[in-house]
Amino acid sequence: MKRNNLGLAACAAAVLVGWAGFAGAQQSVVLYTSNEATLNKLIAAEFEKETGISVNVISAGSGVVIKRVQTEKDRPQGDLLWGISRSLLQTNAEYFDSYASAHKSAIPAEYRDPQDRWIGTNLHLLVVLQNTKSIPEAQGPKTWEDLTTSKFKGNIAFTDPANSGSAYSTVTLLLDMWGGGNAGWSKVEKLFANMRMLNRSSLVFQGVGNGEYGLGVSLEYAGYLWASNGAPVKVVYPADGTIPQMEGVAVIKGGPNTAGARKFVDYVNRKDVREMILKQTFRRPARQDLDLPNLPGKMPRLSDLKIVKYDEAGWTAKRGETMDRIKETIQKTR
Image 1 (cartoon, one colour):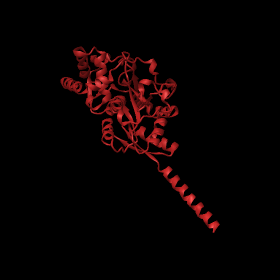
Image 2 (tube, helix red, strand yellow):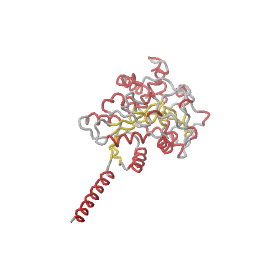
Image 3 (cartoon, one colour):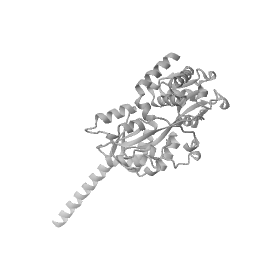
Image 4 (cartoon, rainbow, N blue to C red):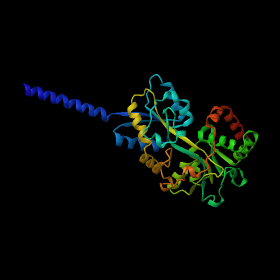
């Protein structure tokens, strides 16, 4: 009888271990993201491979993603957000759990929340993409102001700022750079007159990559991505300055798997993971300890570029009235 009891105990223990293993294998996190599918798939697969935690990716525009978090605040269904702008993370920080990432010290203070409710993962620089087959390298623009000259008229692709946050940032950056007020708007009008306004950001870098347009105002990573695939695309960093636009990650307060979400936050900012992301997608990391000139793409260090001040919070607050003026200016130049 004693032997039978021992046998039963052993079976029970085995069942419990089996269930524990099954539960571990089924562990998952729900990720709300506005990143591109290529990046989401890469990180979801690699994170699961390393941790055993699967990633349920729910992808949408950043505004839609934030609205979902707000709507679910009393019963969160997601575990974390990724690929969201600093302004949206700042204005919605109340919905995020405070967590000091293991890689916090590698991220400059300007790219993380003082209360650790969000942290930067990558930086998008506003640049000009040049197809060097359409426009020889030496004949391309060197500054933002060069884009207003008549020789580039009709040969510059740009996303309608109504459909793109980065396009809105570009216009407002140039308004500041060009003196603001009527003087700034006058130059913006001149720039718009040279541009082809497109509905989606992807149409800009695709158009430059395939030679439909000689120039495009876009994001840094897109130029390196097309160049890596053999397109004659050069990334032009305007000599009169640019700005880095941060995207980050945050753990949703009260989500189903906070522990798993925190592991994801640490994973996505780890140095070797950022090198992998750079190699595959050319996303510039927020952490500043990667030797970018000697990594795929050979990007310049942020410290080697002219970075100008930009009132992101101020222009976000004035977005409604500014967009009205932008729409009027676009219509005026069509």
